[in-house]
Length: 450
Image (tube, rainbow, N blue to C red):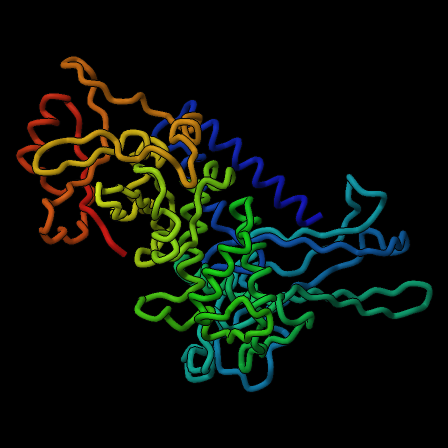
């Protein structure tokens, strides 16, 4: 039922997105509040934000109707001597159960508007002196009730799965990693000291949960080739062996060699990019996504000129790039890649439109779109035409201005320009002349190599 409810919420959010496309206005609550709704994940609570929880009595006891009171308690089962943060429920935490209207007489109680407050120690300090990070601290929400029936005194108690409490939304990815790792490797309901010495996972276990994560948030899971690339990125060659061990630190805390972020943070940024900007073409399997640069070139080598593939950036968080191949008369293959498109750039122009309208400027001359076939040999428009939104730009002095994606290709033998930090760097004279004629804005990005 929980899974059913979550998917129902997702369907409702999808409908809201469709409505916003059709009509919206300044201060539209759907536009403002939907991103916050999407960021919520069960088993993670943010301080300062109210939350709701519901408890049911799974046994029908008519004798106790309307008299069974339930008390909610936070952090009741913390290990003794723990120095990390502890919280208590700030708002009313006791309510009476009632008969559910939609049920066959079962009792339930819903606690609305619950809010947490951090405890302070005798000296006034907060409990942040432990060895665990904020997102490794596990907490629990307990529910207790007492009643008399048929001369029996009965105490009831249940608790949630371990929870993570965050204070900033930037901690959400790390908090969710903790939730996944816990539920992947143990079925203990109250092991709140779990991350004091977290067990290792086999690559086979981790690969399964990563594919599940993509299928849950991005609909389509990961195939064997994509998982092999991720395994080698995490563990090096031979990662396809299912018994290779992965530590918690290696997965979520240690940076990928040569990068400033961990594997999980990289994957989380890609999940967000897919969900917000690439969902349809990801679902249709047009994004190869997880492929190394070496494999990418091996796949494109020898292909027809203009063949390209889409992969996620390995150096930019939440970025997607494309590489196309050119064939020289000598038979040598030349590969061209663009600076990755991140969510900040894709807000202005949908990615399918970028593929359709992409141009290259070389020595002031604008070439035709070099992107012809999606790997292995799918005509570009056959793959992406149903996703195009903006009308294609045409040369006409009275057309309205549109955004055109471009890259400036340096002369042969010259050093490529460094990746630009702005989506709209200054234009070259040749580009300005062309854009002046076509009344198009420039969204140039230099050639790029990862």
